Length: 216
Image (cartoon, rainbow, N blue to C red; front, side, top):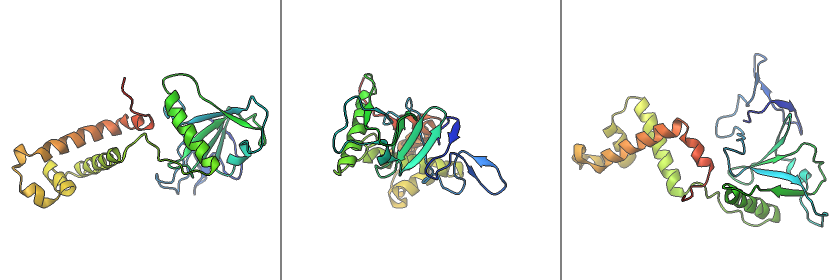
């Protein structure tokens, strides 16, 4: 979902949906969180790419706005938002609504601390358009995904009044925990860390997942 004020709809894709009862919703009420289109702002998600009119004459094979209009489209009062689901987990493009469907496009990347993040996103977009294999989004590694999943499972179990030991049994196996002296078990510290980091993630830390982790 995008927080900007909706202004119109395009390609049969409305900016707001009505559920039974006649109320308008900014999201589709019948879709789960896994399938709900989510459009983050450029300041939060450093993989958002801004499209601009190309300053050079078009040549054969140049991308135009029309190439992206078959995806999910939102129009606000100031911008056109496009979500390319086929570039997993979904690539968010932002364009000026004055750009015409057949205008050749360029990608505008500000020179700044987020430039490398957007270059990585631009690389994935260009590979997709050229028909090449698109690499996975590298903002989260496979190890980080596994740990995030464990965090959420631990938090969910804790909210259902499970003890830390019970959480460890589910995450690491009953037999492994039974062999440990719980008070001095490294699994106890691991569960504590998962609960602490999971709580921080829910409190807003999840926004860090939208940026590359770089050494300062």
